[in-house]
Each structure stands twice: as structure tokens, then as C-alpha cells.
Length: 253
Ligand code: FES
Image (cartoon, rainbow, N blue to C red; front, side):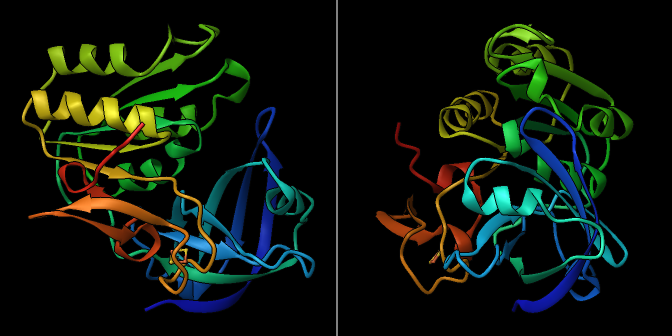
């Protein structure tokens, strides 16, 4: 069940070279959102398709979005100012991150860090590894520092934290600490690598995929992803996910 609500922008701040941090007053959606869910936002009258953005945090009647400016829709969002209205559908998605559990290792790549912050706040004894292209796009690090017991950063160009992908820091934390769950969100190669590591350590792993979306509610087919139970089939990321158990989905390169 989702809600269509006219939200109000409370703030919309540029926080890195390409990322923005927006807080929206949207009491109905914020009041029932769960970690892993997303909103689908109408971006002006000229763009037909709404833009799906993961919910980064919820605080009573407001939710927070940390999004990257990477196209016409998100570019329009960057121009919104305090007091502007937003036509929002949400909270969307039925596959969500578990809550109320302990010893969770969160692994986020780029925008994928955003929904994991919400998950960190709803669980206990979390640690995180965040990967970014460069220090100029490293976001939410202070937020994760404040809610996680350990935080390691990796950047592709080595300008912050470990140089390279998140794999080495993830393995480092797994050598030193015991985790009951791994949650991951980010680009597909990262999800695949994290799933393999989780399987090797026999740790239950939940991953949130970043497929292209249109309707956001299971009415079109543009977010289909290969999943498996007894045999391979297709699921909708927007309706069946966006969070899946890692063993449930077929992560092709
Ligand atoms: Fe339309 Fe998922 S975005 S079915």
C-alpha cells in the first residue's frame, strides 16, 4: 500500500561535487516508511516518468533523501528550494532491510550508502564500509560515524580511505569482528562481490538493487530482475524488492 502525498521541501543542500541532501515534510509517507523503501517523485511537468530515490532517513513527519545529480529529473530536484512542493508516491517497495537485529555489516557504494543509514538507525551494533569514486563524492560519512561502531571508507582513486573497491575493507572487518547480517546497496559488481563474501562466511546477506524504474509500483516491466527459487524466473525490483536475500537474485555482470 502506498500513498500519494504533496510534500514540502524543508531544505535541499549540495553536499559534494554531485550529491544533494534534501529533507521533505511528508507526514503520511515518513510515518510508515521502512529501511530499504523508496519514493517516486514527479520532477516537473515536462518529464513523464517519476524518479525513484531511496529514503535515507525518517524523523517523525519528515524524510531525508541523499541523491546524485545525474540526469534531467535529478537536475530539476537540485533547483528546488525551501517551501517548494513535491508530488510524491511512497513509501514504495515490499522487500525491506530487517530491523531490530544486531551486529550488522552495512556495505554501500555511492548512492547506495543512503538507504543503509536508515537501516543502521533501526538496528544495533552496526559497522559500515562505504565506497565512493573519489573523496569529492564521499557523503554521509559523519552520519555513519555517529551510528556505527566501525566505519571504513574506500575510494576508487585512493583519495580517501583504502584505495580500490570495498572488498578489502569488508574482509578486514570480517576478520576482526563477528557479524550476524550483511546488508548491501550499490552497483551490481559490488553487490556480487559482497554476496560471494557473505556466502563464504555463511552470513545472511540482504541486498538492495539499483535497477532502472518507471512506474515504481509493479505496473510496467522495466525493473525486471532474474530471481531464483526452484527455478529461475523474473521479479519486479520495485514491487518485490528493492531488497532481496542475496541468494534469491541472479546477479549477472
Ligand atoms: Fe514499473 Fe517496476 S518500475 S514494474
